Image 1 (cartoon, helix red, strand yellow):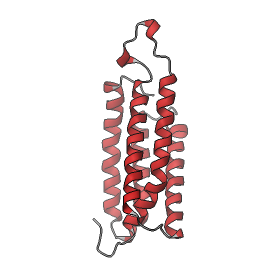
Image 2: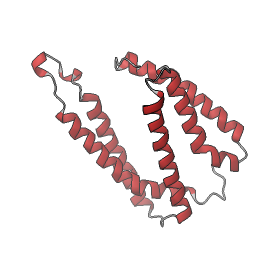
Image 3: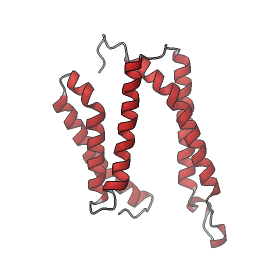
Image 4: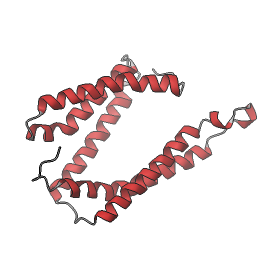
Length: 172
């Protein structure tokens, strides 16, 4: 819930969209190209809907669409660029997200922890750390911890279920 004196929210989003939109398009196109290069295993009688590159290709297309929407939203907003302090906060958050993703992929998954627990720990840390300054400034640290806990528990239950039951992927 934004307060009326929070005038920085829209420029922040616009700046992120100006940079992020084209990056999502490029990443999505790269995923589609990579998915098209994966062997479809037709010689082994695999149906088109069971081809290994189908899901990554569809996710890549979704990323392209999302990148286009973000780019259009930033272009239509025509808000001046954000201050250097806000831009440094943006890059701090990007770096933090990258670090957390690497800790999850390299340190948590496949090293004794169940995937569900690793997923929950990752989600809790990610939500807590990315929202900490905003929640502390608003005096809502307890609420932030509860939200992070709810996201972590929900993700720890749903993500493995979706991967194992829907995509039939065996998780570590």
